[in-house]
Amino acid sequence: MNYSHDDENFPLTRFESMLKTNDILFFDSNEFENIIHHYLENGKISLAKRAIKLGLSQHPSSVNLRLFQVEILVIENKFTEADDILDMLHDLEPNNEEIYIQKANVLSKQDEHEKAINILLTAIDISSTPAEDSDLYALIGMEYLFLDQFDNAVIYFKKCLESDPSDYSALHNIVYCYDFLDLNQDAISYLNNFLDSNPYCEVAWHQLGRQYFAIKDYNKANAAFDFAIISDDTFVGAYIEKGKVLEKLKQYEEAIENYKITLALDEPTSFALLRIGYCYEKLGQEDMALQFFKKTVEDDALLDKGWIAITKFYMKRLNYQKALHYINKAVHIDGENVLYWKLFATINKRLNFLEEAEIGYKRTLELGNYELDTWLDRSDILIALGEYDAAIFNLLQAAEFYPENSEIEYRLGGLYFTTLQTEKGRFHLKNGLRLNIDYSFIITELFPKLIDRPIIKAIISESKKTSN
Image (cartoon, rainbow, N blue to C red; front, side, top):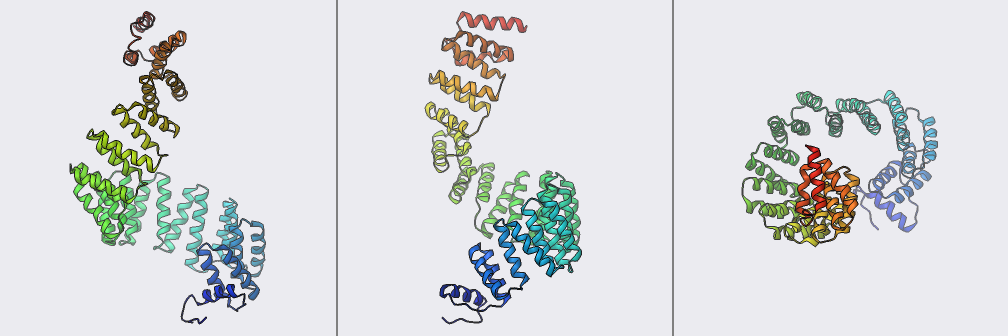
């Protein structure tokens, strides 16, 4: 095989050719480091291990190759072996910053975050360049995040950004800490100060806009996103956020313009398509709204908000057949989505398809939606279907989540009287009246045949006298 020495992947190509032929070729230590780094970056751990083994056989004194060996041991959770190698390396090169970083990494993987921080602080004492300090500050910040010590984390991310103003990862982490601490005003002050020194930092303007949006100062948010766009007119995220602000300001046509710019700058996103649909709906342009809702689900069939938007679009216009058509499609794509099943049940109920509606409410409950109205709607349908025992069982389950609820008690009272379980009926009906006498109409509506029974009239009459 002929190799071109101009090929930057020449060492990698030689190495992989060697593995196929079992020939042993010589590589210098830097070539091995690049080969190993490539394999680790691409998740090819077994090939990285082979390269490390061969590299150490040719360069047994290489500290960097030993550090790669440590990295592999950490990935494999072999912390004791990793520690032994690091101790050996520390004896050889006590001022090697990378050894400290790997020691901290081993401790961090074992949830020894405080110890990892102390190791990294020691590394800062021996580091020789601001760039090295910046990396170490970032690592310390991350360790504090693991400890949920956001106040300390933000200190070190700020140090990181002071060392390297272009470190946008640190900037994001600073804002994340402020967000977690609900310190929007502090975040705003910090970002404004940062922008005084870095006026064309589109990321900082974008983050500032998000902070103003969070405190509902939409005009300032709008201005911040404008500056982000001035700094970088291809910044898709800024157009998206500006569109959201303009929606809040009820400037729907301008919002549409910004969302459409993102479609031209990059691959269309389902979020932008959906928001355009909502804006057209607000403007009363129903055909355009529906067109973009459909584009949303074509772009991302798994986005539940798209299917829900189309379904609710038709529900608002009382076109339940069309709404049912689309929610059926949604359920077929994702049968585990509780929001779909709730809409499926509601639509079928409106169409008086009671068996289907009952299936929908049952599935909604099975998927963990324990809202009171879900239990009550299902029980009312079971009552209408004459499934009294199932309705009782459903309501007893509901009572575990909503004890002392008058709506549940009235229904249980009516059901027990209907199934000739008089004592239980008396108990629950009295409970319902005690809890809220104004809801006694439930008996009239759901159990009209019971209302003329003397025993029920007497219980209601006695409760009304007592309440007066």
